[in-house]
Length: 157
Image (cartoon, rainbow, N blue to C red; front, top):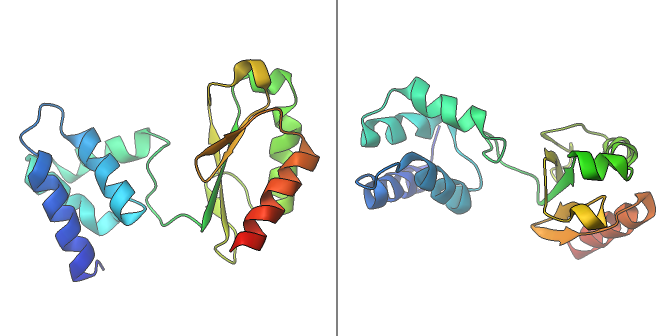
């Protein structure tokens, strides 16, 4: 169930852009930026505002990996799983991240501290493997560097 504040935020964001051509994606980005995710209870508000079915809105949310249907952890870890990063050890890094965070893709740790997400290019192909931690991109990440970054994020909390 949405709080009144979140429901009003979603309504305002839909109203602000509903007349734009192709408004759904910009609205979803705005909602996720404001709320942190796209609440399932907000799908109806979005659909009604854009004269779409709930299924159409849900389909877009679930198609794009960027959109979350649940709140993310305090820290969001994204590890590139594209070919350039794979060739430089991203699979080992991914396995290590899953082990260290005791979670797997698109899941949040039990304490809510980290959400682990796969991405399929961070634009650092020549400096692979790459990861982003809270939208800050890091290049040439090995397991030791991953541990340092995660430890620093834990300490900062």
